[in-house]
Length: 476
Image 1: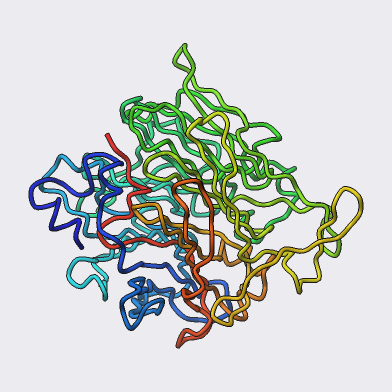
Image 2: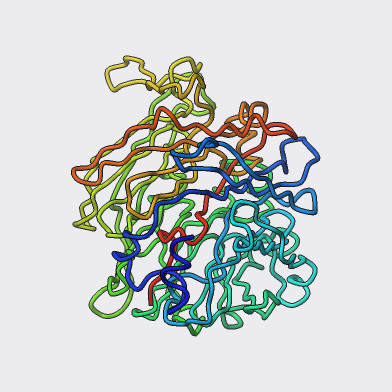
């Protein structure tokens, strides 16, 4: 909690600049959302506290579990009630972790300050209240605003239709305030969003209709128009939809969206899962926004799989606080990549590590080279454990030297592509990062096994640091 004592007594939460955040305290704990929903185990999802202090006797262990009061939530992403966007407000405090439940529609508010090792439930925002006041359901990404409000993207209406999606506002007491966007300005599909106040712009992405993705992935649903391929450009903070960018066939299912951390910059990236392209978006001279493919992960020709070609399936990605490196996970291929983006137009691959995937040695699926030879990836064992699933969510330390990785995407998709995860549970890894020249290497001494949970194997998803994981902070 070094950030709290150093910063928040004299100023608001977080740090004045992204570069100053890099000098923040080393992480000692991680909060991880863990899921039983969709696994066949009728247990409530929970928030795990993981010890990541290498000098602690409980290093790489779950030291606390906060179970939710309901069954069937599907905890997914998480966010803070306040971040560096509130740094100038001494009354603001990064105390509460916001946990939207993707399936049930509940939003949990967790107090992490009373006891950081054992956080407690502060409040539950019920889905009936959200639907009654906004018509929104399937809450996903949560960001704090400089006003003290909390904004959450919602992916559909209560019946799972994408046309009902939009942005939920909670006030600083976590009461439903209404929708953020102006009437008639909702996006076609919802998922992630990021705002860049100095450019008076918010950009959101497009997963798909909940009625489709909650049942697992069906390629026909893409053809049927139930998945997205657009970015939506809004005026900030007004909520007016100014522009829609059609990413075309190179940008199918655009998910995580990030501007560069430097608030003066007018460029960022979105990871397009199905086509496995990292698309750069940027402001043009006339003030409109455009896009181009910056990184392409070629599909692999494979044998013994459901299709003759396998996409990498870029899921999560993030950018280091100094805007030098971009990291992303290929959930199906099984590798995590590091790119130098000092020239944002021309990213350079500088690090890659295989930590799972469908083509690892021992799998029935094999990849083929252009000349017809077969190959499989070498995936290390960690502390005697074979790595399951593929890398999915990632979180970076403030100094950029440690990358944490979990492997659950969404229970219905886990069941479809990695059924072993539902049987044996998720795990969390740590990857050591070379921040000088680039390079990634798994930490052989860090392995958190969520397959050994008291209530049975669980699925691990997003990770947060107490006091602030500033790679998701927004500077004003």
